[in-house]
Amino acid sequence: MLLFSLIILLTSVCHVQAKAVFAHFMLWNSNNFTKEDWRLDITEAKIAHIDGFALNTGFSLENQHLLDDAFAIADELDFKLFLSLDYSGDGHWPTDQVMKYLKEYTKKPAYYKTSDNKPLVSTFEGAQAAGDWQKIKDKIDCAFIPEWSNLRPARSIAYEQVDGLMSWTAWPNGTEDMDTSVDKEYMDALDGKPYIMPVSPWFYTNLERFHKNWVWQGDDLWYTRWQQVLELSPEYVEILTWNDYGESHYIGPIHGDDLDVFNYGQAPFNYAENMPHDGWRKLLPYVIDLYKNGGKDAKIEEEGLISWYRVNPAHACASGKTTGNTLTQNQQTLPAGEVLKDRIFFSALLESSADISVTIGGKDRAASWINTPDGGKGIYHGSIPINNQTGDVVVTLTRDNDFLAEIKGNEITTKCVNNMTNWNAWVGNATSTGPKPASSSSSSKQDSSSTRLVLSGSIYGLISWVVFFLML
Ligand SMILES: *[C@@H]1O[C@H](CO)[C@@H](O)[C@H](O)[C@H]1NC(C)=O
Ligand SMILES: *[C@@H]1O[C@H](CO)[C@@H](O)[C@H](O)[C@H]1NC(C)=O
Ligand SMILES: *[C@@H]1O[C@H](CO)[C@@H](O)[C@H](O)[C@H]1NC(C)=O
Ligand SMILES: *[C@@H]1O[C@H](CO)[C@@H](O)[C@H](O)[C@H]1NC(C)=O
Ligand SMILES: *[C@@H]1O[C@H](CO)[C@@H](O)[C@H](O)[C@H]1NC(C)=O
Image (cartoon, rainbow, N blue to C red; front, top):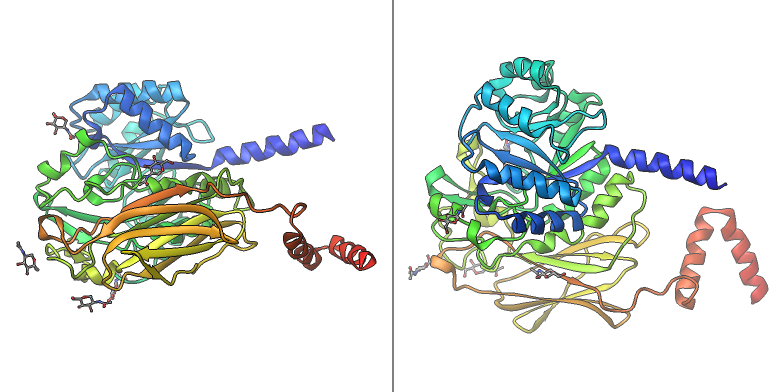
């Protein structure tokens, strides 16, 4: 029996190792990182059950010691890293530079290896350099999984040097709901080869220097997209991103001395200031474990609540000429305020159902869940319209009138920094301090409902009912 359990355990552990979750990490935004900063960020990523960072860099990286520090600390903390070569920022990576970097870093112990023990190498764009990879792979044996969004997946996979593909389609078109059609196109073309599925919570960028000024849909996306991960069960997931402050989709901590992107990029104002996104990591340990377990079950370490919203209603101030969608990607544009809704979003991780309430400026607002998990355990999600209300936001979680958790969020205001609507989100989180839900053995109320559940599924239900009636 023990041996049998051990075999089951071992096979499930092996299965778990095949899947991994990465976060895209912009080295450019960590130029001032000390070893302590690496330690902090890697520790936070590990708490969130993230396996590694995809280190994005162009070929003209000035501080190569950054990479040395990162690999040293990752090794110390048992975390993984791999390179994501950016062909967009500095342009085409010279082949000799690619080989130099790969030769040096893929041999580091903290470099991420695929299940067939090859170092994973990814890109941001660079389809025009497809022809370089024959030569590179002749010298360095690696699993090459590029993100070549301007080629159809079927065209990309036709290159024999390609071992898998990543997509960058993490946001939907305009007001459309996010769906998995692009992911499915990739997975079909890959026919079993590894797919890196992108997951992102938000998108707002306004950087004049780079002629970038648009939003894509965030809102419910952090909830929706993880449900899609569970549904498709890809080999890999990459969170976009850990620290891209200039596009507002960071989920890592904000480092005050690494926000040069707002000066250098000529942003009209620093739209990440006072906009922490740490709360977006809070439900990750559960949802990542669930994804790795094939969606079957995962342990809830602690019940908790997260909430996010924009602090300026869409019409409060000037739009800053920010559009929904972007002409730079041949999209049809629409007002930013049509793509991002004036709503307060909330998700909770719960052992069983609980009640949600929201006040804005002290006024109670009717709130309830829109999405609830099958069986009652898991992630709950919902939102309420802001309706031009202003003031402090308080989101509270209770169960049978017992207090569980509360978020006191930043106020919603029509006073905007630089008189421009900030299209970035404020994110908060709270851990439940309330009683754990009664288990089926300690609460009579729970007892009857769990008895009913069992009845629907198995012979034990029948026996329970017989016993139940005998007891009556
Ligand atoms: C995006 O949505 C618009 C309508 O909002 C539609 O006209 C357009 O065809 C869509 N584009 C794509 C690529 O689906
Ligand atoms: C790093 O710090 C220096 C000195 O304070 C600053 O000039 C630079 O902009 C910072 N880099 C980033 C990426 O923020
Ligand atoms: C701020 O923007 C509003 C709306 O666009 C405008 O009416 C107002 O004059 C602006 N105020 C300042 C100080 O620029
Ligand atoms: C909010 O106010 C703006 C302008 O003051 C108005 O156009 C809009 O309809 C209002 N929205 C709601 C939901 O009341
Ligand atoms: C999220 O919770 C952690 C502690 O669990 C806290 O340090 C952090 O400030 C919280 N973030 C926000 C934005 O509320």
